[in-house]
Amino acid sequence: MNITWVLGLPTGHESGTFLALDLGGTNLRVCKVELHGPSSAVSQKHTLVQEQYKLPSEIKTSTAEELWAYVAEYLEKFMKKMGLLEHYNREKPMPLGFTFSYPAIQYRIDHGILQTWTKGFDIKGVEGEDVAAQLRHAIERKKLPIELICLANDTVGAMVASAYNDPETIIGAIFGTGCNAAYMQTLSKECIPKIDLKDEEWEQLKSDDGSKSTIAINCEYGAFDNAHRVLPRTSFDEQVDAESPRPGEQAFEKLSAGLYLGEIFRLVMVQLADKGLVFKNQDREKLRKPYSIDTGFLSQIEDDESPKFNKTYDLFKETLDLSPSDQEIELSRRLAELIAVRGARLCACGIAAICTKEGIEKGHVAADGSVANKHPKFKRRWAKALGEILNWHQTDEKQKNGGPIKITSAEDGSGVGVAVIAAMTLQRKSQGNTIGMF
Ligand code: GLC
Figure 1 (cartoon, rainbow, N blue to C red):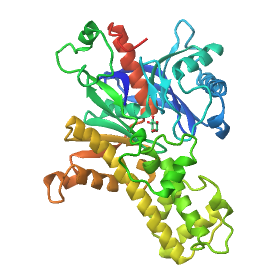
Figure 2 (cartoon, rainbow, N blue to C red; figure 1 turned 135 degrees about the vertical axis):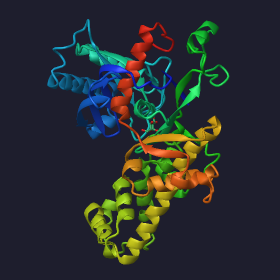
Figure 3 (cartoon, helix red, strand yellow; figure 1 turned 90 degrees about the horizontal axis):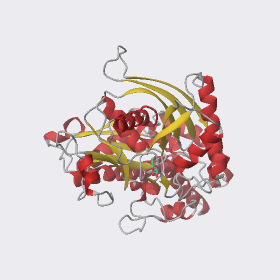
Figure 4 (tube, helix red, strand yellow; figure 1 turned 180 degrees about the horizontal axis):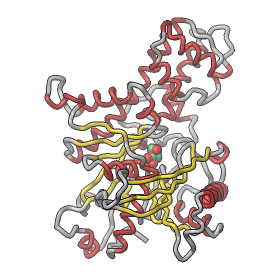
């Protein structure tokens, strides 16, 4: 679990203009975010313009120099396109919030040492290094008028962006390529022994009105049970792990997140085909290609209500060049369901663990990610499992309307969220509270 130095949730009054950079699994996104704060005449609390660039797949296995040069190049392109180079200079740089959706140890808010790449990334020269410093160098090399203010995990961004609009937000969660969540923890020596501060610094962290201060914690629970002491795994799970770039890591994520669900499905099908049980006498070359099936494939199978499941047939034909029989389609539907149900129920376990530990009984879990947003049955399965774990019985008042802890669609964490964090950081700095920053 990583300390993030995001102190407290936003008030909704934060304002200013920021650059937001999001290094996601498939895209690089650059945004200009204007936070209008409380006194704005516009109905929206923010305006955002953005450009999205597809990350070339070679980048995922390149080097630190190539990665950051690529990122800086697109930051420059964006600034030019939006006419921002005319408004900012090196004396008055544009503040930048950086969403970095990988596990990073943060000694300060504008710093993050990558612990390990996750989600299939394998770029050399970044693990064990401060990614904020690497990005800063690339920005300096290009002489861009940008100042990196904060680095934030996507889960923290989702929580903050959602809390900016919805004060009932308790957790930010990503159920997408990866699986992870962030929550607010009481800021005290007892609650967070990992924080190493002097007594006077603890004093400084106390809020003015004497109420308890809080800090965002990035759980990084995709790495839960890396020692394999708790969760049972099938031979297919073991194979996914063994053939991944980082075997032994992200054990929980490999059972529950979008990057892996399609691959588990594929491995089962390959084994059945090898045993001569499915797709006999058909060309299985495409099925043999690792990661040729994504979670979208499983979602579409489960979503297919066409007579005789024609859509599923077409999907197999288009994606894998296979012609499934009626029984093979039925088998695929059942398998897609089993894999997705297990994933959704595990995702609920992560949130239930936070709520149980913190004694949280109600609120909104602001969720983002392709599985949460695109899988037709994920949210319902997740809510049912959460109710079971937290003992909201079917007849109970609490179970009505989905229970007191609800999954909501997160606001844009990697755009608005990180901009709000940058605004909160600058505000804190101007008030002289600089613990965990700069
Ligand atoms: C992986 C990353 C984590 C991120 C999650 C969702 O688990 O390690 O930092 O929050 O994916 O993107």
